Amino acid sequence: MAEIKLENVRKTFGKTIATRDVSLTIHDREFMVLLGPSGCGKTTLLRGIAGLDQIDSGRIFIGDQDVTDLPPRKRRIAMVFQSYAVFPHLTVYENIAFGLRMQRMADAEVKKRVGSAAELLHITELLQRYPAQVSGGQRQRVAVARAIAVQAAVLLMDEPLSNLDALLRLEMRAELKRLLKEVNSTVVYVTHDQVEALSLGDRIAVMKEGSILQCDTPLKVYDYPATQFVGSFIGNPPMNFLTGQVKVDGSSTTISAGGSTFKPSPSTQSALRDSASVLLGIRAENIEASATAVDGALSGSVLVVEPLGSHNLLTVKVGAEYVKVNAHADAVFQPDQPIWLKIATDKIRWIDRQGGLALA
Ligand code: ATP
Image 1: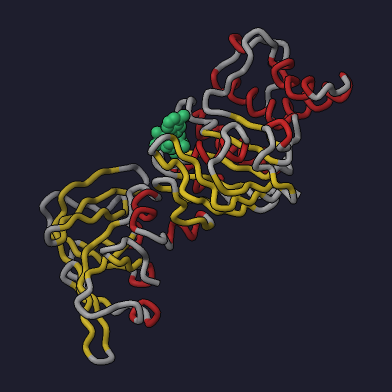
Image 2: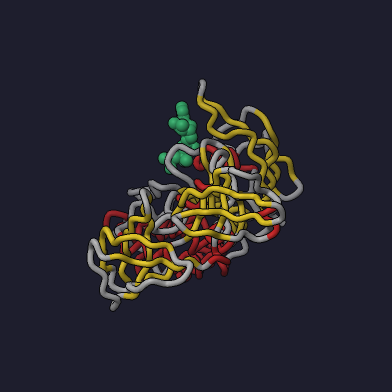
């Protein structure tokens, strides 16, 4: 059992608070992604779990064991780092065997473990080569194989795909996903790439300035961001946010935004007060663009048309605000053309404008 439990983990560097009393439970065999912009504390948290840095306060548990004061080698972990340091003077075979040799494992067992790790990562034919004789992507796989061969209860990965070119990254992403379902480790994976996070994670912990803003399944984080920041950070393009004004009139609560009037759900209504300023959050794919007037739609004018192959990305000016809309690839829109935007009201995320928090 390798559940990881973080309780109020704080780490500071001088005046910088790298992690602010972070609490998080990562279930046994779960694939948890730590996602956030540069400097938000992802690596610090991972290094804390690994025991590479001593935390200032809080506790870290792996399984039933409090590992807060244990050195890395006693934590049942394996790691892959961004730089994927493989030893240049060792063959691929010996690189993968490294952790096993450190454990003084018998040769026959080392051979078996290296063989199966290499097979999983499709690098069997490279075992006798040196790192300089394989490609960057293959070197990356050697580093992953080395971590997997140890069969640690916990696998910690810090941006392991960041040094690869776009195509290889895409391939490796799918490969990693397949592979990590076959090993029984609990995985903590750091990235600032939101697509990678959505594709790989069982859950994603979105971080900002040393805190976790939301920890949920990829779909939840995408469809129901807990804050404006999460909605902006996840998804390409980011979620649109239009400013709205609440009007409470007796038992009726409405919100005007983008020149249209919306009726929020009862649970959202109960969180609203008259004249409050809110944000209407909506994703580009949940807006239908029309060249002719549509009842209840927002009216605007097309500013930019970006053909992206599978669809066209439109930037539309609505009043003084801008909205990104996905339109069909064969829909013909021109800059300056009037346009009507029909919003899928069940997909709206209402956010409190002041605090940036979702309202329901
Ligand atoms: P990136 O995606 O750029 O790797 P990150 O989210 O992993 O960023 P961390 O490396 O955890 O962020 O850094 C969190 C904060 O702590 C940053 O403000 C960083 O400057 C600071 N920090 C990290 N390591 C040190 C250190 N050794 N000394 C001083 N400050 C540090």
